[in-house]
Length: 161
Image (tube, rainbow, N blue to C red; front, side):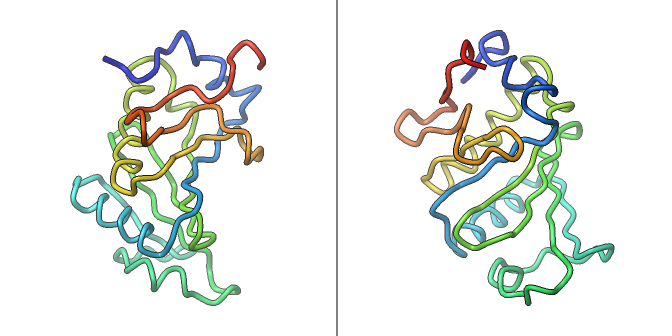
């Protein structure tokens, strides 16, 4: 059974109201949590690409990425949980795992199920909430992985949007 039904959450995947790149985050994280995500990506065999600016490199340890000087090229890790869905991890800070997803890739029940599975894998591995906020509107999550429920749940009323 699906965590969420497309008809119930379609408004949260609308490009006009959400922006095209909603923010997904795991608050109260640590370097160890970042490393657990990197390990999960490797264990699942998800296609990925790590880069610093234009330079593509092997995926380093989280502590290496997060200890880079502030003026260094911004690193990112592109992860494809399926061939048609991309998540881009940004490494802004050690205390929050953050990444973007592209709503244009997440239309319909099948793609929603992929996103929910991805959030569930990360949330279960870390034992923490995974929250999706509208682009640039951090602090107002609309869906997220709930550790106690062990599934992705609605966190905002679709009627209010």
